[in-house]
Length: 208
Length: 296
Image (tube, rainbow over all chains, first blue to last red):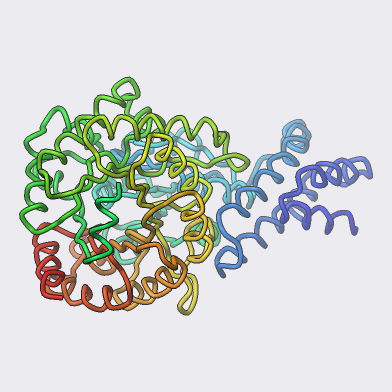
């Protein structure tokens, strides 16, 4: 259906009006809401993510595409909820204790939503026990830890340790400006990604 | 304001290096707001400024990077915005004395401007203006709009600084390498556009600080592009102490004072007029760089 491709293109460009109009057209035509999400919206954010990784687009393009997707999702979500359809995977995400930076964490949350994850954002300056409680309460498949400061990186290790000591084997991924794969290995995290788009690829690998 | 620019026309100057890591070494705990030390542990902040001044730094940067109302709100310190900025400027002023210049430090407000975020340019200008005003009241000679990613935010901060009177305004962006000899900010802004917009908004000095994983050859190439884009406007560059490495679970910047001093002459040769340091630099790095500047 060409409207579906048009919807993908509209979200990718961040054209909110067109994205919501086409979503309504597809719903009116009787397309199942989940198909609109999986075949119309998710590919749009995936395309944006690919371009982001190649430095063809940057944070602003990512933000406006995500906003267009969010508005389309607002129309679809009540129908999914009514039909009892939930995203397959849940991710708990937050910035570690001592760190108040949220831009990177928000971008990753946004891109995970764009890949149809159920995202529980626990905010900034999050204590290890709060990550653990949120992961248990929401039966999370994945936990994402963010840090911008080199000085708060040790809090990532404390958080990973808290999960392992509690015997919780939820996959944990980490990211932020000073983070490297080597650091992820050292603290026993399951993965690291250098940017918000790669974080989605990693998340999908970890939950698969 | 002409004083700084006049002197700069005759010789290159040295700006200072990192503040946060120096305070951590003196016992600041991770997550604690470093600006609180401007009133709570003033002797420690003053000590860092003194160490940089003794290292030969002509320009001292106030400990007010996160000093906008919006950034302080996150620490629940919004009510103390003016007080903490004024105190920060006073400490740098005392250390700089009559022969050094104090740069009142203004960092990013921590979110996105409209249409990406909710903040309007007018609201943000008022926020930056309030911080700039407090810094000037505390004794700043010039204002430093630093680590910018969004040129619109930089323009807003520069305009707000200029609202406060005839003070020199320095504007620096944080760049990442996005291709072969190509640098952009997180928002995708290239060197040319970033520099041109800062100058058009009224910046008297433009350049770069920090940056994501840039090597010394990267900084030299970035310097060439900055100088080309800036035309007659003098350029400032404050590199990190090399690209960060992880050793034993700690992130460290490994460039030695001697290695940093070795890029001073090439940078000045390219046309950079103010050199300084960012992440991982210490008074020892700046002392070596200062020696390099003095022997040019």
